[in-house]
Image (cartoon, rainbow, N blue to C red; front, side, top):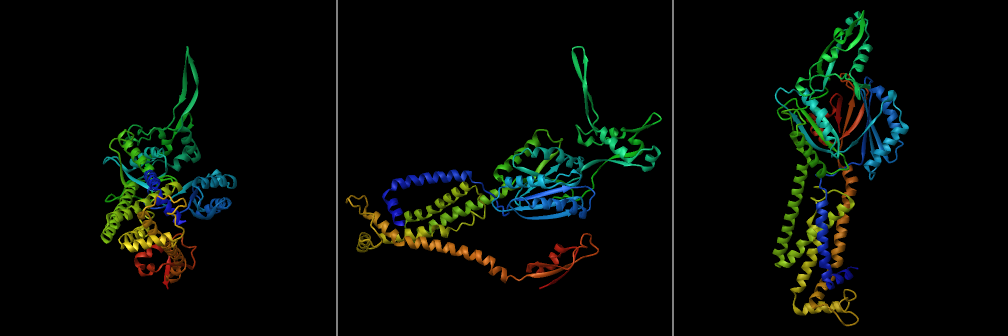
Length: 553
C-alpha cells in the first residue's frame, strides 16, 4: 500500500503538485470559514426550567411546582439527569441531556413534555431557558449625567436597551444587574378606607381598570366619521424626559366610589409616591459602588465571531441614533472577541515560530536548504488538513485544540524520511549503486520502476528517493501510530484509575447551624473535599458558611 502510494507520487509529480495547490486553496477557504472560540463548551445541552408563584414558601414550591415539573420531564427522551432547587416563590429545574443531542431537539422535547405532562396550579406556565457555560460574550454599563439617577438608568436598561438587544440574532438573554427598578407606591390608610366604606380589593380593581385605553365606535359627521377612543393610561410625565417621570396625579385622581354624589378618589384614602422595588442585590464596578450593568448571553448554537460584532453594532447605533436620553451612553467593559483575538494571535504566534524553529534546526543540522524547506512545509499542510476537517464536521477551533498541537509529532515522519534520503544521496557511489541494486532485486518488494514493456520514466534519482522512502516507511508509520495511541490510552486510563486512587481527600462533617436560616434540614452530612481545602481552611471556610463543620482526614 505504502509502496504504491510512493510510486504514484514520484511518477506523476504534476498531478501531485496540482492536487497540492487545490489542497492549499481548500485549506485557505476552510481557514476563513473556521470559527475560533477562546475555549470549548465542555457541557452537553442543559435546559433551565423555572416557575414562579408569589408568596409561596420553598416547601410549598417544592410540593406544588418542582415535583410535578420533575415527574413530567423525566419522560423526555434523552434526559440524563434532573436537578432542582426550590426557593421562596421560585422553582428552578435543570435538565441535562445526552451528548450529541441537538439544542433545538432537546428544547422541543422538553417543551412537548411540559405541555402534555405538567399542569401547574393557578395557571402558572413554566419558562425554558438554555444554559451555556460559555455563553457570556458581552458586558456593558449604562452611564448617565450626574443628576440622571440610578432608577432612571435601570429604566433605560429594561425598557430600551434590552428590547433592542433581543432583536440581534444569537442573543438569548440580557441579564440586568444593579440599579433600582422604578415602581409607584400606593400606601393605603386603613382608617380612611373604613371611614369611606371602601375595601382594599376595590382599590386594586379601580387602579387596574383605570390604567387602560379603550376603543369605541365611530360617529358620523357629514361625509366623514370620527373614531372614539378613551385614553386612560397613567402618565407620569416621563414620556419625553425620564427625569420628569415622577408625577402621580393620574393615580391620585382615580375614582374608587361615591358618597352622597361626591366621588372618593385614591388620594382621599392613600398616599401615592414614586419609589423602587425592594433590592435583592447591588452591582459595583471599579470605584463605583452602585451602578447599572448588564450581561449579554449568546445562544450555544451561535458563534462569537458572528454575534459579538452584531451586538457592538447595535450598541453603537443606540449611542448615536437618539434612542437613549441625552447624556446616557452604553460603555462596554468586557468583550469576548478580545479574548478570541488574543487566542488567535497566540496560536498563530506559536505556529509561525514553530515552523521557523523546525526549519532553522533542520537547516543547521543537515546543511541543506531544500531539505529544511521540505520538512518545514509539512507543518502548514498538516494544519490545513486539520482545519478542513474541523470545518466539515462543524467543530470550532480554540486554544486547547489548535494551540496544543505538538510540532514534533507532525514533523517526525518528514524528518526521518528527508534525513534518510539526504544520507543516501551523500553516500559513496558504490553504496548508492548497491541500494539501487537492492531495489531492482525486490529487497523492498516488487520494483514498480521496471515496467513489463521496458519503457520507464524513472531516473536513478527518483529510484534513490523511492528506495530511501521504502527503507523507513514502516518505521515512520507504525512508530508514530503506536506512540500516539499509547500516550492517549495511558493518559485516559491513568486519569480514571491511578489519579483517583492516589489523590488523598478530606472528609468534612457538616451539621446544622440553628442561628442560620435554611440550614435546619442538614444533619450530619459527610462531604468529600480535595486536600487543598484543609491546607487553606481559613481562606476557604466561606464555602461552608452557615454550618458547624469539623474537618478530619
